[in-house]
Image (tube, rainbow, N blue to C red; front, side, top):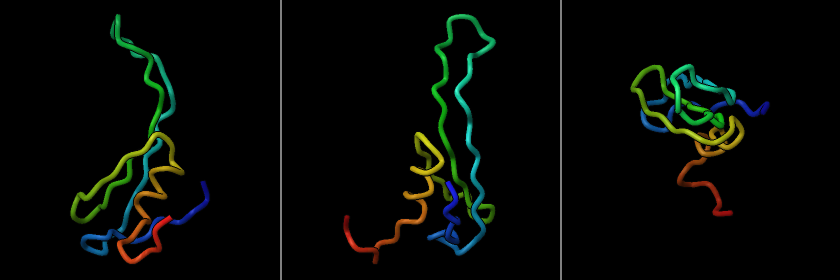
Length: 69
């Protein structure tokens, strides 16, 4: 995942990404977390998630004026 995050589509603020790797929970009987990614604007809190960093980035960078795939 090398694609740069575009500015926030809502306010133009800076976005940050957090990728959470798969892991087991310390609490008994909790299922294994399969991993995911979360992107959030540092200004307005606009956010999106995905199963991977690449998926979340693709969603975040999508704009209404982009061509439909």
